[in-house]
Image (cartoon, rainbow, N blue to C red):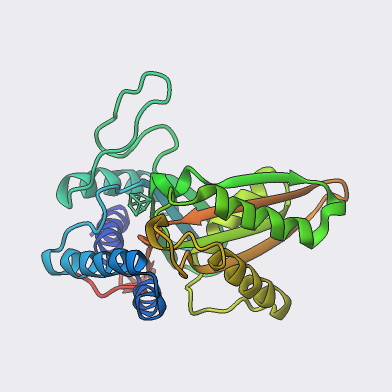
Length: 293
Ligand code: SF4
């Protein structure tokens, strides 16, 4: 099999895994949420979500009708074979997955509203590249739902507002988002860099599993503080009131210009879909988040 075909087949599998079955850390967090939620309306929503997760798995179908905009995160080993083929392979994989799974075709031209029909388009699927050492290629499929995307928020704060300003901005963003991102959500927060860098980091931090604490103890503490504050809003599952509005808060940062203080808040809905595999240079594939199905 050519490297191009191997990348394509692996990526179709990843898209299928991502849309059909949530990663364990997310499904476990939703089960825990159901156990601790006390609001009746919130419990009904969580029960429906858990049932939906079971049915999707049982019938091998997407767990949400909104299959999102397809995003990939690629860690490309500089010595890996087939680097030049990755982009074309991911486009082919997106077209095939749209037909074979099937996925709802979502990509439309922003000016003409014409739907491409296969989830591809200008810059889409979007690929986040990272060069790594070695000869392996690690690919994460990350279909990003529209409801949670619509409430992502970027604030260009003034540096004098400090961490207090960041906390206020994050909690205000959660309140402003309300029911729209299909809570319980995962909230990615990033500061520093510039407007684009902060939002890129905020989104990428959504890839960190919920059971993986921030390696920086100060940031881990801030994540817990923001998690408690977001859940104190009472927005609850699907915005119908309750204790569980967010499943987790993830924080990252870059150093910044002394005069700039961007704070980005990226939302991920309960359907927090991601699937990762590593393609080794000998042609073997290790699926890192799901079993092959
Ligand atoms: S925001 Fe997420 S859960 Fe809600 S409709 Fe979109 S993909 Fe589905």
